[in-house]
Length: 421
Image 1 (cartoon, rainbow, N blue to C red):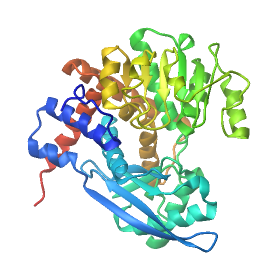
Image 2: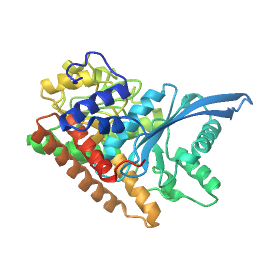
Image 3: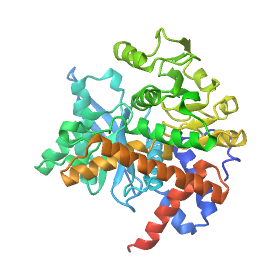
Image 4: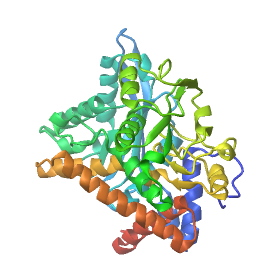
């Protein structure tokens, strides 16, 4: 099945599988090896009993999917959301395998999640859910096995709880069990900004290809969580003109450019961009269709699809979110000449600096922020050039090029290791 032939919108897992199949076919890989790489190594389902603040006992469903251990320990976030499904986690775990391979760091992919609504839970309830979830998957995680990180609705505090729970069971402190934790617990300088910074780095490289300057580049950002807000701040400081920003409720738009420092200050007080006096209100989906040079979707999956892809007016699409574009939309964007920097390249800054954090924890020696940012730039620029070069060599778009490059690297590792029997 080619991506062009895919007529319906697909789930996260189906989207990953469709792209994987196209890339694997173009690489001409052995059928058995393709089956091996397509399937996850392990899927864990747990049921988490938690005493709520009211005294009532509730049971939450949790997942951890470990897609690949070929190139090193599994790596991937843990998300808390009422919409989490095993299928979604399965697809995102595979995406992590390809993401790590694209930037050539020694991890495989994993993803975890708990079906819950953090907005309806107290801090104490979230802590009890996190600790029991950690205890349930304890036998399957570790610095040499699987290293969790923050994801949707989880943060530094969540990682601190996971680290402490794991450490209590190990009877000694194990800082390398998670990344994205507080600096005072072994976190890395530059980690909170890493994904947003990585998006800016690849955007800079895309501008070079088109001979554009930052100051003449209009940017729209959908999503104003950690990735979107950090990318907006860093790009604004670097000279880009941010003309539109949207969050989960609505957006704000100003063709003359938004005052990002004031917007960040406003959202710290009001939580949302709605009501910001520096621009006009715009719908959170409508903002995707505005005339701009760079569109940076940094919110959630499948926001660019077959229904709106023909109305995307950006010249460059930098995917800050995971899977923001569906396979049917890929074909439309390619036909319209949109230069896409795919998610497994564009938002790999987070996992790259997570790798740095893991290395620092294992060394017991921590780097200054300038060194972290310099090494992140080196890896992201190299990966960008590898992907674009691969695409030109094989006459495919950037997304399929990224998949081909990643799959080729994992396949080589598997061939060198052989199959244990």
